Length: 133
Image (cartoon, rainbow, N blue to C red; front, top):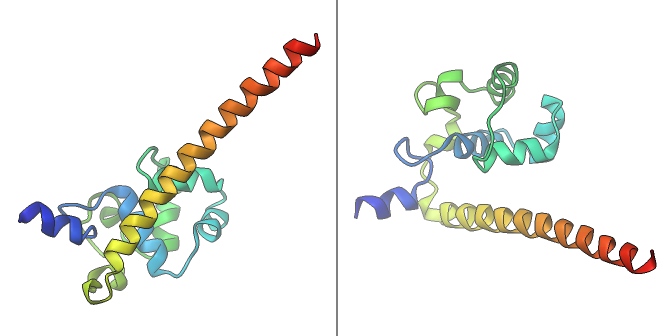
């Protein structure tokens, strides 16, 4: 029952990851990933890595991130401290957590598929060049 509750509310301190908090704060500010990446002076892929918990920002970008998102450094790192108001409101009535969870899963799958396509394209190009030579 406890794990079911945590899955339904991925913004809880017990369940939210660094990437979840970044995504939640970004959305709370009404920013797209592209817009936030531009404000921070980073590549979109870098921000996607942060939100998907596959990489973490350097200290200087972490400070900028908390400032742009208007959250405390402590909250963005650990979930303690000042959080955006939008994260604190329960969105269960609208089923937003389920939609967000599915969208994040699809985004991750699409990114992995795009990476795999790139590998296959390189293999195909190499094979075609070998045939010509």
